[in-house]
Structure formats: structure tokens, C-alpha cells
Image (tube, rainbow, N blue to C red):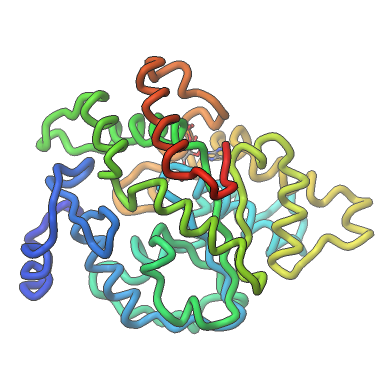
Length: 318
Ligand code: A3P
């Protein structure tokens, strides 16, 4: 199974023994590696990624916290870069899940101690990761490659994570109550957390010259997808031409990548693209503010207080 710590190398097991650990969400434990919490197999993959990935100046790297709209961002970036063919009739997004078109560096390419041949990927290479900024391989920071970060309000991200967990947590691990999950989330103990550290590192980086990073928000994109698609296209170096503006290409991409459209495609109802996860679990509600239906006022207040404390003075707001 994907949760099996027995599949890990002996050397890596040694390392794990030296790391702080917590009860896991999808695996028996998560470990604190380089200041963020992560599952064992992913830490092993991240080390492989850190040691072997060589960024190119033309690379485009999409970054998110889990459950903050990764699937959507992958779809939008892929569609912005691949808009030559007729979008509505035979676009790859109509028959492939976004995770098959834009691979994760840690979950896919560098998983299981593989050394992938990335020269096979189409140019520019469009890749994705959840790894915090501080732990990205040096070549990503030192090259001219570009990074897009999609950030989501932490209350909705928790609710989304919680529902996802309910569907994918192995029964053998026993239940985790919502209260317990919430308490862990607030302490930062969830995959790639603490959430405030993850978003703040990328936020601060996006404020630095040169223009290497684009910071996007899930909420802004829901509100005005066309405007955000234009920002994204400009940043990726493929702005919409005057003619494309007139033809409404950004509007067309917005519809192609919309929650309703992607969710209802056969590939997303029946396929599996990331390990054993069913694609349909990647599409739940796709709205802003669903937290009001799931969190008590006191839970919400707890997250607001954390955000107030941790994000104070940063300029990052929700
Ligand atoms: P909800 O659980 O709040 O519905 P990720 O892709 O990072 O795993 O994030 C999953 C979240 O993004 C889920 O949120 C999912 O429904 C939502 N989502 C997936 N596709 C989307 C789309 N095309 N537009 C908007 N939200 C989308």
C-alpha cells in the first residue's frame, strides 16, 4: 500500500527515527522535516527531488498547500499554455485529469526513488509541488524559472482537507474526529503545514524583485476568473493577443477549467490520477466560504486569531 513505511530504505528509516512525529492524517505518522510536516514516502521523494532536480530558466512551477485549488491551478496553467488547438472540441483537459497533464515533482516524478528523465516533457516544462519555499531545490531559486502560488483561505482549506481525509483515510488507522483534526491543523500538524508558514514564505517571496513569482488567491479567481487568467498568461509569458481578447479565449478557458465542467467529465468521475485516489474526490463543492457550514463560531475564531497573529504586518489578507 502507499502508506507502508516498510517500503522505505534503511538509510531513510534511520533519518525518520531522528525526526519529531505526530499522528498522521493518511499514514500512521507524519514527521517534521525541515520545519514542515510530511508523510514518510513524500519526505523520501522530496529529498530525491532536492538532490536531483535541475531547474531550467524556462520551467514553470505551480505551488499550493494541499486542498487549496491545486487541480484548478494545474488546469488553468495548462490551458493557458495549450490554447492553439480548438479549446472546446478536443482539448486534452476534456479527457485527462489535470494531475496527469501537470505532474507533481514529489508525488509523481521523484516518488519511489525514481530518477525521472524530464527532458521528455514538453517545453516549457510545467511542473507542480507542495514543498515550502525554503525547501525548494537551490536550482529553482537560482535559475530564472517562474513560480505560481495559489493560496486559499485557511478555513476553507481545513474544511476541504477534512472532507478529503474522510474519503481517503485508511480504515485500519481508525477514525480521527473533526475536533482532533482541527486541533492538529491549528498547531500546523498537517501535510506541508504549518499553513501560515507555507503561505507567508511564498507571499514574502512574491514581493521581492525580480518578478519570479506570481501570487494568486482562490477567492479572487472564483470572483473574476477571466481577469486572473489574463494575469496568469502575462506572467507565464504568453499574454492574450488583441485577437484572442476579441474572440474571448480567456472566457473559453475559464469555462473549460470551471468546477462544474471539470467535475462532470468522465475522466474525473471514474479515473485515478494520483496514486490510488479517485479523481472524483478532487471535486467536492468548489465554493468560497463553505467553512460556515462546518466550523463552529469558536473554531472559526481560533483560525482567525492564528491568522491575525501570524500574518500581522505581512499584507497578506483574506
Ligand atoms: P472543496 O473541498 O472546498 O470543494 P486541490 O485541488 O488542491 O486538492 O483542492 C481541492 C479543492 O479545490 C476542493 O475544494 C475542490 O472542490 C476544489 N476544486 C477542484 N476543482 C476546482 C475548479 N475547477 N474550480 C474551483 N475549485 C475547484
